[in-house]
Image (cartoon, rainbow, N blue to C red):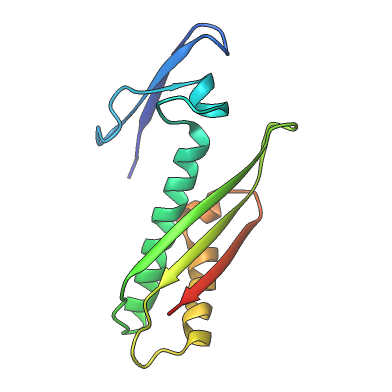
Length: 139
């Protein structure tokens, strides 16, 4: 299986602009620029897309791990907070904040164990070489 995306850029770093599109067309010539990446412009940026991909992948991985153990998942919501060091111009890490509704018959320790396994096994986690931390709210 292959997944594709493309980006086009024109101009200087600070004054230029670009568009990002994905195979699914959910992003279709979506704008990005210096301002959307390093300030408050309208559009997206690569770091935001990495965080979104990680949140989605991890949340699905938690659901899959629970299902594989015969447990029906409830509501799962993940915020992925990507730490971009502007001085070094590098991603320092990603923190995952998982909020999950309590599942009857599954205690908090068991749920956190499943979540930690999903963090390690998530396809996007495995593609990243930065520290990944996790906090679970199970209520």
